Length: 104
Image (tube, rainbow, N blue to C red; front, side, top):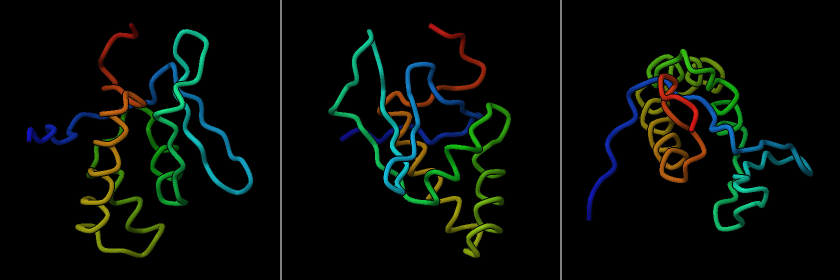
């Protein structure tokens, strides 16, 4: 099993993902070639939605973790671990991309 490289660079949402609040839940849907990829729909909790909103391409995982720690009253270490895991899952599903990467 190959482990994904840790997320280190600032990320931004991919151009082909839409985020919508539906029935009190935040849904992330990749839209490629005009159709939703139903195998990669993400329903995120309040913390995940908070993190996704912070993805402006300028914040590092550590900066995001500090904001999560303050907002949700968890340790920064726990926030960093959880944010890293969440961002790696989003990256693996191609819902986010490195901020410096040119749009494809």
